Length: 131
Ligand code: FES
Image 1 (cartoon, helix red, strand yellow):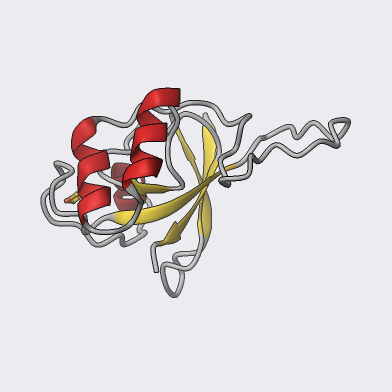
Image 2 (cartoon, protein in one colour):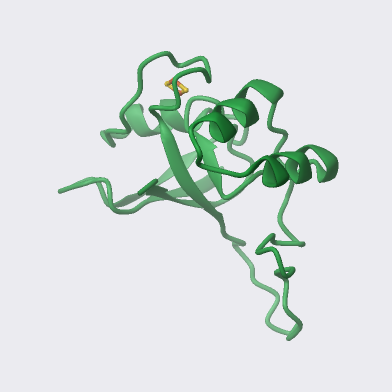
């Protein structure tokens, strides 16, 4: 089990819930009373876009070096595969650049912006609305 922390989705929806690794973020939100707007649930419409921050349950406080590269990518983040459809939708709606999408594919990393209907939960995350 991992923690999913929802923040900024409205009254009574700021909460921390438990989820199974492998669960879909949108389903976890729905099951816990957090409203993330959505339409297609297939990664096409972009209506479920959210911001994701990966949180480590046990931060390594001995490492004082930066874990973020100059482009803002966490070099220590666990990987979450993003398929072409999700990346294309995010690029088309202007949520990420083509360069970010290409890096996500090249390094098998997730971007800080995800489609909740396509986001497979791998670790503890903080989820915020995309604004
Ligand atoms: S609901 Fe359409 S992309 Fe997620």
